Length: 410
Image (cartoon, rainbow, N blue to C red; front, side, top):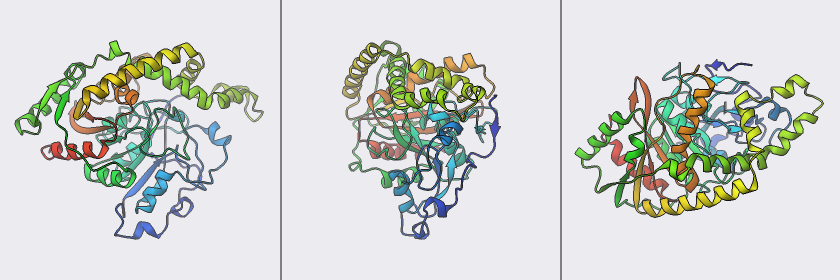
């Protein structure tokens, strides 16, 4: 099997009608905060009466149709959002590429020759293509932030645990978050005020800029130009620099070890049981997952208890240091190392890029912090940008600060 592109980011399995999904007259009530806004739902969230494939046909075939709906989905529908379909996801959400060898890679509408980013690929493409206004997704290792960057969208990975993750397919629970993507900040804020129970936004006393990380990315010139513009417009009340040495802190390695161990705890029993399924031929058993996904699962089961113990200690050290450094501040970091990889990039190059990417995405992931991507620049016609990060529970404050910054971005 080979990867292929599809123009439709929505799944066609099962019915996706509003009647089946449980939409009611609330979506027609103009007084509701999300009235009339179209909602695309990543196919990890359970919706009563609709199948959940989690991006994999074998998962779909071996799990019953859900009888309950994710509370996040229900909350958005109750607030007036209009369900418009479930969207393609990378297999079991275990990728940042946006590829799915079974259902297809949703075509990035901004740069069709490049990957859309994942694993919330379908939700991102649906919003970027103006087929939806809110793209509901998940973010474990970057699955909101990365496709937001690649598709020129706003995307929020909330504080870990602030939004319930019930009635959905988990990946690595201590990192899993429910997030969303939008074309504009106003819609992102409306969605946040429905889903978040954060305290009233507070003002930040300092802006911390991770210049060493910015210097390492392909769009360093564009980011520095944007930062200088904000300085000239006096958007920063106080500014200082911070060095986050991801190699010394082993951010990617630590994150991947802990994530991998949790993934095997969540899905190892099911994966091991596939070999005993009579309904699958030997050939089908060998192609349940795309080769790169299979390799990751094979690696997950080799992670030892000693590996996990060491990674947990490293995670705690990094979290303690970072939380202390950013208290009362907004941290500005690049979201990705640059623009989206080409669709036909070699596998080894993509694997190397993944590690580089996770050096950055693991910063907020390890510490459970909120991170908001802002699409403030392009490189060679492809979107990219930067992120705002701060302490746990400052999700709405980050949005307020982003509104302050984006007033000046045309």
